[in-house]
Length: 136
Image 1 (cartoon, rainbow, N blue to C red):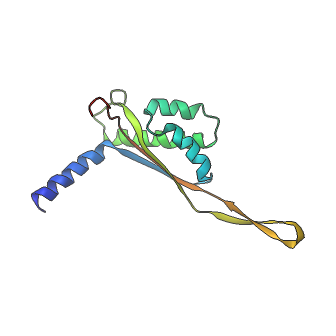
Image 2 (cartoon, helix red, strand yellow):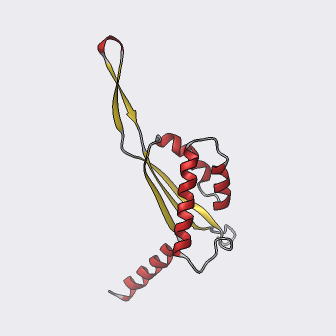
Image 3 (cartoon, rainbow, N blue to C red):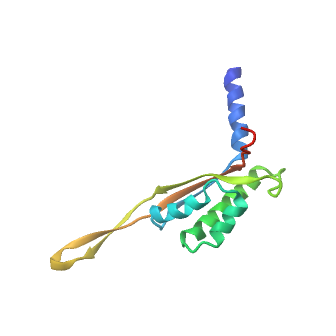
């Protein structure tokens, strides 16, 4: 491997060490309902995001809170020498994608049938160090 390629690989490895990822697959909630809750915590500091999710009335907030705690634990596992209290973390990215769809049939009048689509979603949270806007 050349020197330039090696240096870039080391740079990417150092950047990847700072972020932590957690994902939730096949959550039985529609992606639309999950995105409403996800939009409230995108870009927010981690402790504030946990508070928002804790006191939200939406059912999706329970699953997102658990997922955010998992992402924080993953960050702590990657960075054992850093303390969470000293490092300001934020929800850098939160992505809600459509998952598999269960198709059911519901009887309708006059011998017809309507299709019911039971949607699910995949959620991915990326937690990273907070970037100060003053530096830019």
